[in-house]
Amino acid sequence: MTYQERLKWFHEARFGIYIHFGLYSLLGRGEWTMYSERIAPKDYEGLADRFNPSPDAAMEWCTLAKQAGAKYVVLTTRHHEGFSLFDSKYSDYTSAKHGCKRDIVREYVEAARKCGLKVGLYYSLLDWRFPGYFEPEKYPESKTQLVDYIHNQVRELMTNYGQIDLLEYDGGWMPDLNPDKEYRINFWRARELNAMVRELQPGIIINNRSGLEEDLDTPEQVVKASHPGRGWESCMCIGDSCCWGYTRFNPNMKTPEQLIQYLVQAAQGEGNYLLNIGPMPDGHVRTEEIERLTVVGQWLARNGEAIRNSQRCGLIGSSQPGLVDLNLQGVWTRRGNTGYWCIFRWPGHTATAVRVDARPVKAQFLVSGEPIDFDYNEKTGKLKLTGLPTLPPDDLCTVLKVEFASEPKRMEEPSPAAWLFA
Ligand code: FHN
Image (cartoon, rainbow, N blue to C red; front, side):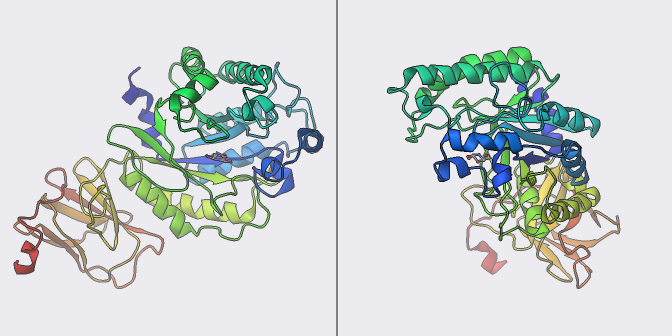
């Protein structure tokens, strides 16, 4: 299978839901609590016996993801705290042996498949319980134990749950943030690890957080396109950036408008948006998150054509690195010769695009199909969509679909000041 073939579903999807759930969820202060508060394992591990998510939690996450218009989900099977949400021969510190005594990963994988979602598993390489992670030279045995342990657990995840579509490593950095990539790769024996994963799951997509580039770049809390041809996915919290796991007081929840803008920006760069939820201690999703995801899903149901399988668009407003041109209204996505102008800041009666190097043949509102009049000056490249309503038809983001005679590109200007005399 070629790289393009493996990534086909991923590009079609453009939108996924991340789920951070673990013992930290019981504390309500985010997933880094154990480390940030330096809670020793002996004092932390007691949480495991209180871990008892509702039996329908996994189905609730997946139903919500589907309702949000996501095409895949990614669950933290084991975060940095080290508690596994799956049954493991290599650890008793799991949801199968404590508290609810259930294999949450199995419930999740089954729920995702029932909902028709692609299955992603998150797995943290680092585990704060091992001194050998923090001080490998002082605790070499612990370091070896940790690395053997993660190889064994990843093998279990890749063997026991049928087809896994996406593996998202995390926590591959060194505690001193040593930037030497080769050191990290050797520390985790990442080449061997990923070769094993690919043998067990030939179609899988693997992210870049084991130190190896693999298939996907994964910028965090920002939307940042990789070079053309390379798969990428921006992951983001709904609330504050340190709150992936349930954070009871989480004041800065993004609005649905903001979430949709991030999704559109990812789509315009031919990338994906992985939006996180942090279920509550009982596994249910908080109302603030349900409400936002529902609105995003309603918008996507109407405007998905502009997002799924999107390609980069060379028009202004399409984030060409190094260029200062801005389109103030919104951004363009593209499929073939069709441009989708996703307008966040409604301009009123006329929407003007400049430096358009392709002849428009048809313009319409994406949702209603209602035609839009346009005026195009082939010489200057100015395109005006006219007769628009005073108020935006969609408060969240209105999409204007423009079919061009060829792939829409940015027109070269004879000189930077030429437009002053046009
Ligand atoms: O430390 C983690 C964090 O808790 C969260 O899981 C994110 C999600 O991508 N990754 C790490 C930071 O890069």
